[in-house]
Image (cartoon, rainbow over all chains, first blue to last red; front, top):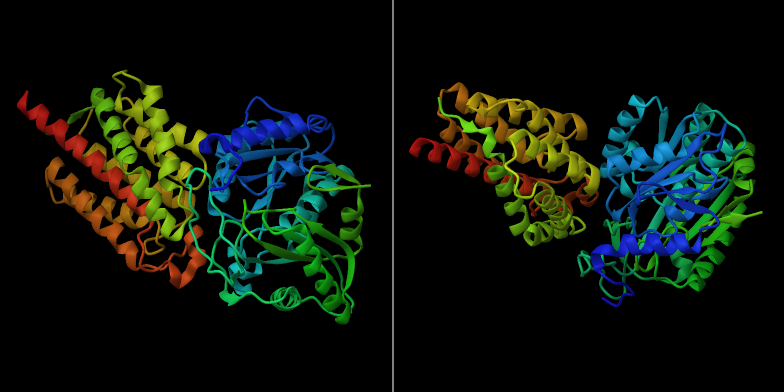
Length: 332
Length: 218
């Protein structure tokens, strides 16, 4: 392992401590060291936005705590869902009395822990509703959409749900728009190298040199097939061929595009990929309403990228356009 | 009627902690084949913390199991934290206030724990999860006591069914949890949860059998 760490079992503690020192103008620690919140949360009269999940995906999840974005985050061990109590503490940190929208990804552990945390919150009279992201096209067939994982599309779901909350929307409205966002979002990932959980010390999967895992998940879950690495232009075409027919995205559509690195791919290469994605979309008369290219949702030091498209109407455009300030995404 | 004294809770808890700690690396390796390879690390963390929290106290069985369950739920997370946490908390509440447990009491504990996990995770036999160990083990135990087998033999029946159940996961395609994303590629490997569940049931059964034997000698 070529890593900049101390005790491999304490990487999450050490990371949270450093993050907080860096972003103290935006983020506060709560009584639970595994729950961070926006410094002004709970904001009176605003629905609280909560997410959470295993660590190792920086900027996700704590990098999306901020103004007009996520209010509180439950932080788990590397690739391990946070305990129910941690989600519950995040609900408490975010709730102003107007309810909490817990917007998270479709993983067995998160589903169970959020379910248990909701029961705890109900006893306190905190209303919690959920939207479960399932944007990863490669993780199950279209007929089994409820089985699909949530990946980088979660960022767009948070952006939209948090914007509705910031504009004063009710819990019902926040849930409706966040659900609408994810229902209109599709993603696919490719992995070129594996990643290593520091405490495990070795990769738990293998990708042969010259090959790529098409449809890889955010924890190295195998995808649809192993293929030879092709040129960036060919990879762009292949990824769009998986995403576009699934919604389907059609001529005349407006889309938000999010190209995220998986951790170790140079950002330069993400722009090489985006260059072709833009052209293919233009050829198909699909307009890019707003692009995001960078490391938005990573998987430790995996090489590879995810491509996410969200079809936007007037309402989603307004939500996407709202100012936002957090480590992972700042726009004015 | 054979009974195990609940005042011996610490002995049973220590057996559970020891089996997970001894097998932590093995469990991570099993998990690494089709999962992310941290099952043993996470379980060990929770069980070792329980050892520290309980210390040298002679806890009642219910309190010991409840402590373990709460640590798993509150500190470990993942999918296994809530699953095993629920398992031990349900067992604890089924024997709360008991001075001793007989074969029917243990049947209640096992039955309640099994149903609670079924309800929480929604898995069924054949999905390649820990329920492939737990459900046959529970059924075998219930059948044994209904057939008037004594406590120790019923526990042995449970152990044997747990072992068979665990082995059955080798030929299954995962339908739930992270390994389900592998489809056919998950065949040929043990399920990590089914493996740890077998270890837990075995340790629990052996510890109770020992207590019953000691009781007889006294």
